[in-house]
Amino acid sequence: MPIIEARGLARTFTSRKRTVHAVRGVDLTVEAGEIVGFLGPNGAGKTTTLRMLTTLLEPTAGTATVAGADLRRNPLEVRRRIGYVPQAIGQTMGGTDPECLVNEELLDQAALYRIGKADAARRAAALTAQLDLSGLDKRPVKTLSGGQRRRLEIALGLVHEPPLVFLDEPTTGLDPQSRSNLWEHIRGLRSDLGTTVFLTTHYLEEADALCDRVFIIDNGVTVASGTPDELKRQVSGDVVTLAVNGAHDKARELLARQPIVADVAVGGDGVLRLSVVNGAEALPALLRVLDDAGITLASINLSRPTLDDVFLTMTGRSLRDDSPSAAAADEPEPQPAGKE
Amino acid sequence: MSFIRDTLIVFRRELRLSLRNPAWMVIVLVQPVLYLVLFGPLLTKLPAATFSGSAGSAAAGSAEAYRFFVPGLLIQLGLFGSTFVGFAIISDWRGGVIERFRVTPVSRLAVMSGRVLRDTMVLVLQAVILVLAGVAFGLRAPVTAVLISLGFIVFVAVGLASVSYATALTVKSEDAFAPLLNSIIVPLVLLSGIMLPLTLAPGWLQGVARISPFRYIIDAMREAFAGHYANTIMLEGVLVAAGLAVICLVLGSRVFVRENA
Image (cartoon, rainbow over all chains, first blue to last red; front, side, top):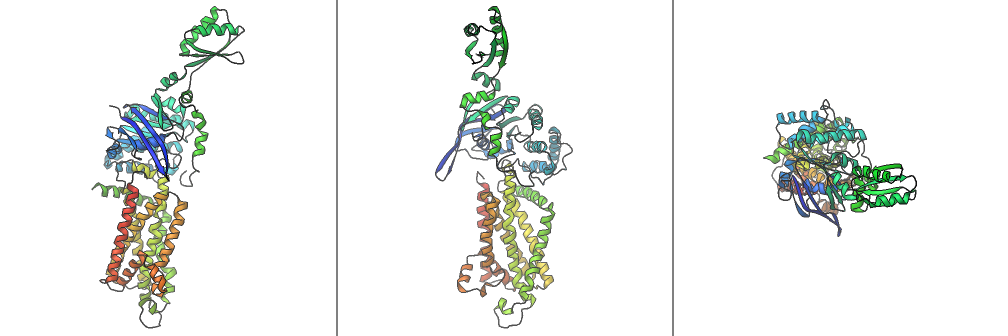
């Protein structure tokens, strides 16, 4: 049985007679043990969907089962079984109080899940070790680095050992080193604790590096899902770019006849661009054809589609346009003192 | 009952955070004394008739003046203390703390009630300090009257803190919350007869002052301080205080329990 199953989940906001369809119909199936990414530009409905799945927002339509409990009929049971780590930038922050000590946050969080004191202390110790926070337990939250604070926020989402944890933009705002470090920790959640991870991101490389499967959401609808490789294959296949010494037309004719070549285009510089299904396998065959015809190569290059190409194909827009500088522009002013 | 346990979890956390803030501690402890020191000497110079309505032009004894003044200051502490607690919840909301709590199985109402419990405790503590300082200055009042007043203070703190949190969490902006508070509290202070008796006011102002719930509560507290415990003024005061607390609690709970806050 899938750990998340959502059908037609939708949310409409009505204000002053204007109706905004923030999420029009999201279908999701996530199996236990997966790391799943929810990818989309800002305003696509990622956070609204996440807020519905975590019982922060009531759906206006659709059904969902989350961690075995019915989202609409039994939200309290959903809350008991999931962990949630809010996004740490934007309108609201990641959920830790700058004045609290690290250990106090962990023990308070455990108390909220009605975990006894001895158990809570044991879990707090295990989580600080797991998330590389050892030795920081007596430190006020405001003295932590960005990466440490983010790991504490993730630890808070795991205090009750939930089978499923939701991470909203887990690495946004972190420097590249802290980001790849956090990826390691997120992989560790699955391998060490067996936790299913559902995360939102607008970083393509994050979805690519971290996620087993990706859902792409645009305009409030899930437009595609699959492993990053499957999605890339669906798009256009790989592109082989090659330049030959003379005999352009002959080379073009020859290559176009190959069954593995879907399309050939000639650039203004005489460079040939070939769309092929599987570039890595196609390369030797292409080289042999040219060699047999006595055509010599000046250069050759193989490029594989990125998730951005996938997004471009699915939605007609580039995800890159929206991240990360545009995303930063969307955020409100930096928080005043005390939130550093 | 799990609601009580949840309330205590939030209460403990909030109290711990408050106690860690030295500025907050000092203000809480000094504020009641400051009110008394700044305003008290003014009042003891007023003629006794101002307070009692009886004849005589001699300056009122300080006991008389403080029996009038201390109940007013108790309410002023509430009006300027408990109404401002909402600011803290705006920063908690912005910090994502409210949202984090709302995704746990903890009662969503406890997010408010735990804080209100802390605020009520603080106001009662301030009230006790104020009364003790008042005694040092010359206040003479029956112990029963003091206990009754503390009872009123509990109702006032519960009501004002609840409505402060609910309002703050609705507007979600300090820039909107601060002017809103000022525009409500200042008229309330004037209309409640805190500084001066409303019997000095012209008829129309006395009429307008009827809309302030605190006016009834202060009157009842003054009755208690004068040793009158069973009359219509006291009954009105108790009903208004309890009504205020209940209505504000219900309004506050609705904001905290509603699905999308």
